[in-house]
Image (cartoon, rainbow, N blue to C red; front, top):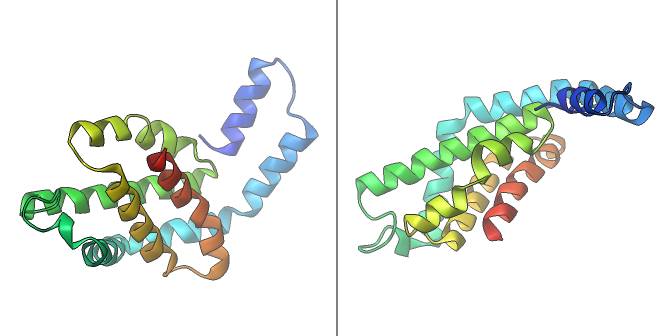
Amino acid sequence: MSVVSQVILKSDDELRYPSSGELRGIQDFFQTGAQRLRIVETLAENEKKIVDKASQELWKRRPDFIAPGGNAFGQRERSQCIRDYGWYLRLVTYGVLSGSKEPIETIGIIGAREMYNALGVPMPGMVEAMVCLKEASIALLSNEDAEEAAPYFDYIIQSMSN
């Protein structure tokens, strides 16, 4: 949900008009709109490049993942990891676009730990995978855009770390 939707729903729940602070938040949201769109466009247009670079970096850091007995050993398992990279990158774009971490939480984080635990995927490995995804993504952005996008990646990393 966007900042605008959140303000409207909260105001309506409390049967009041938006406060001046909430209206300033909406104004800030609109002023950063071009930047958020630029970030999302860059990440979306470069998904394959980002996913390839992030997965290669993860395999370099953790060759045990792709070795016999590793969670990403075999073409099917590797393909699933790469698929998940794309899914998490898409979640980040939803967060950046909406200006909120809520889409990341509601669409992707709730239940992810339980799913990975049930599949026997080590969470420290997922955390490292998300760090690689962040690094590959941020490398394509300007410093200002990277600063705006980084907290969305960090939110996923932190959520998987807990």
